[in-house]
Length: 138
Length: 138
DNA sequence: ATAAGTGCAAAAGGTTTGCTGTACT
DNA sequence: AGTACAGCAAACCTTTTGCACTTAT
Image 1 (cartoon, rainbow over the protein chains, first blue to last red):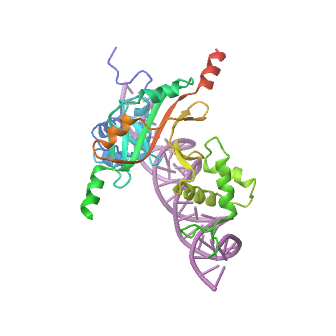
Image 2 (cartoon, chains in turn red, blue, orange, brown):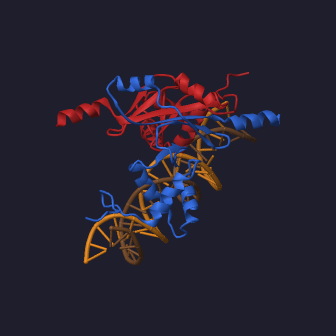
Image 3 (tube, helix red, strand yellow):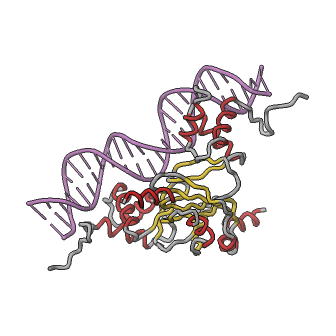
């Protein structure tokens, strides 16, 4: 029996998947699907946006990358451990807030009997850099 | 000087606004814009969806209602005090989790100098009722 | 009277999908 | 060989917008 490049579910290894995965893993700025597409295109110019969407969704389901939603738009994150985000509504940048979900919040959800499977905790506001820029501007 | 029904910004009081506001205030289930539209239509059948969208946005900006986003779709909430939400991914129901933002999380954001203006903290999972239903089903 | 607001239909923006052809195993 | 996958364009769904008409003040 030869070594198979196909996973348990019959998924195949394609050039597109490799490029998309590498693109996300090397992007530290929470890119949108469109941005992943633009970056992946530099390596594989014939790739299509539909494929990018399909592969991103597959990678998320497999737990290889994670997805966050900001302004009703998906963004992809090479970090898969849970963390919060801070979104600057002035410059658009997204900052990782590396803390787990607060235990009290968790208790308030699980206390009534709900089962947490996922969470998304996002803060919005003015980032340090935009705040400084504004101060100087005056 | 007569008492004006117009607020500071020259906003007028219309039947549409009154109906939409009342609809949200009396809806305890975090309705979508479409649901607000359907409900408002029972009182004012000629109202349009565009007006519902415009008025909801205005009410949110004025702080009279609040908006949460679930699955990239806006939902409206009569409660304006901050709270978290739990979304059941099995039945779609949304539950209020009445706790403020954890102080530690806040400190982790403000520590580096960011300024929090808003937040949205959502949990996803299986609600108490769906969990019970499943247990009985076996 | 006049400017804000409404309704309608079209457009926008992000994402998904059907189909046909391609390529991994 | 046979099935999973890719590319393309069309469809989708929610939300926004331009325009002409209406209405609150």
